[in-house]
Length: 418
Image 1: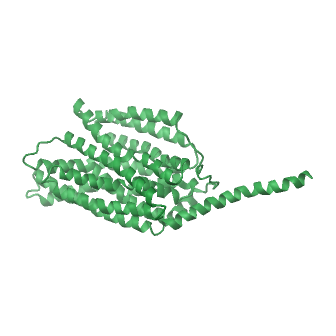
Image 2: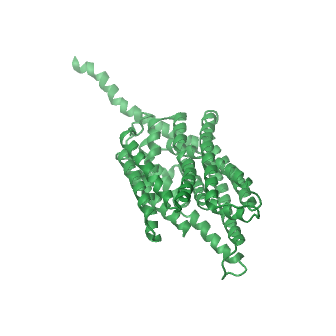
Image 3: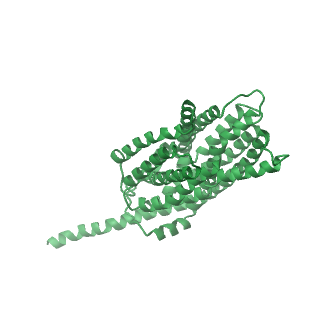
């Protein structure tokens, strides 16, 4: 049921993402984002007072609706303000929010909950930051024209044409499948990682640690891995892409293929060591974070400007539907099933060792999924150059067509005056 809460949030997030993607390509992105962040903040705060599980789950779903509006549209605004390597850097700055925000969530949630003696106070802190975000969106943020940075003159097409084009875009589809694996792993580890490490450490005879302190340590590791991993990925992409045009998907694939053995070792060594699992989790998350800014950049430059909000929404839908919408719940179900098979007496409460071992085996699924994601990123490298060239040609052709009547009128004007 704990994993189900996260599933409800992500299902609402992914279902509403295509709606906001459609609106984001056609209406005011500022208004949509302000509405989403306001909804997100209000429902987080109100949900903290609800004590019935079903209604609490409903409010978690409403939080997902609010987040869908923001995360679907924000990267497209950045893409319309910057091009080339500058865009990659700006997207890296934006995508700090995921690992760093997650890490701060563990830290603030554990500190607020410990100080108040009630975990609900962790939810009551964040809405104040949300109100600041709404104010910045309404009165400070710029909402550029679609394709402004690239001086694109491409006109929007129908929603059906947008979807058909995206499905035929091999780079976009392969990177979306790879990012689905990233979402699967991120969702499962964020939800079950602290609990697993806590179970492993408490099996050691000389270790005395609380879940609050463990969450704080896990949050620090997550935040530092994000602070280093996201800009490192952006820097590698910027440094290598000019000499090696396929660098972006290769970096992402390599990151996942490095992360998989690091997380596997962390899972295996958790019951025998104290600090080593945190070091390995740091390495695994650092490698995983290499891809955040690069994946967003790839998704933008292989899709024409008036189709990018729809592309972002489509990627969110697929990656969360088959990724973190189900991974926390799936890991929980596998763990519960293994508890029964590992227990000597299934009718009794499973021992702490059985709980640890069952969750360990369930989390091994994430390591396997990382390898699959790495393969999909390497497959993306086969098509990325050609698909980017198609977008560049489409922008150039649309620009040429828009200038042609102007040039014709300029040549015809003197004759008409005569």
